[in-house]
Length: 274
Image 1 (cartoon, helix red, strand yellow):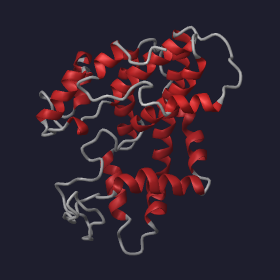
Image 2 (cartoon, one colour):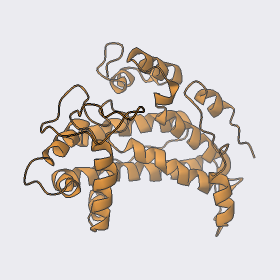
Image 3 (cartoon, helix red, strand yellow):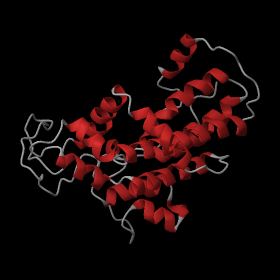
Image 4 (cartoon, helix red, strand yellow):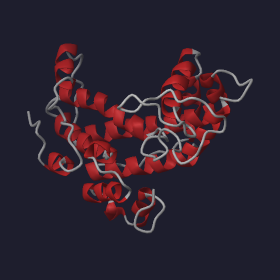
């Protein structure tokens, strides 16, 4: 969606990296009609937050480092998925589907809204197709095949740099596999004679999916390593008690999740200091 003379927020960020602030991201959502903070994404800032906490944990508390690294993977994984962070995350609501069909979705009042082009694509792509490809032994081979062709990231020593790398990843995966390409492939799965959705989607965009996931793998590994090094991690702690890890990642105050109005304060003054 447009913002300040640019087609997207990422284009605005490319023009001026200083726009990557929580205040500006909130304003971007407000300018484009989003009224609730519940709908305002803050993924780069969560990466920023986690990176800084992992640095703090690296030398002093390897269990917290590992628990943070594991939960952190979710956010970098989201950044490697083209539908995340896009206004087309579940199709194009301004367009009718290529082949009319009943909607499977209901609004909060139990009503079935009109079907739109690409409706249902998010779960069909990220859950249905991915699970199908993994279960058929195709997904990980495709990711491994693409690892050598992905970007090697430069040194990252600060949370801000980690957030900027996340923005670059979001931009890069869309250049490999755009939301519109995914929606087009999804719409084709409704044509008579098409294989089941998951198989048809994989046949159409499997290699590109492997590539964008490989991009995410490379950045995640880089962020793990760089946070460990920047935080002075220098020893193998050996086997860690899984009960301790579980108590950490189930603690809602561990690398606390907050709304966009609070994220920069949480980064600067983390609630979890022990």
